[in-house]
Image 1: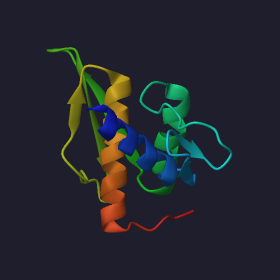
Image 2 (image 1 turned 135 degrees about the horizontal axis):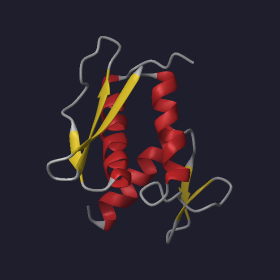
Image 3 (image 1 turned 90 degrees about the horizontal axis):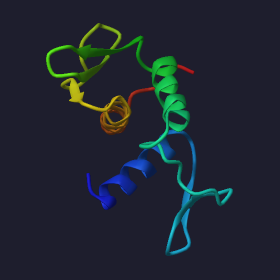
Length: 117
């Protein structure tokens, strides 16, 4: 993922979390002028996003460790127990969760899923 994609994905997550994103022409901030959270670098920033998805949209998010190649697989299921997109696999759990969350938000925005809370 290049820097442009990373910035775009971090802005996508911030908006999903209800933040308004602004720029001074050089950097990106939320309206309290805090820099964009490093969702791709810290569980402290990423876990509230994952919890919002679990609490408001889907009953099960499954992560597993495959013993053969020491990679992790993550799936998000809809209420009928179906995958909402193809499962992701990655060597880093943090990167896997970040990528899966970004794809979920893209899917969510495209399909206009209604929040339950």
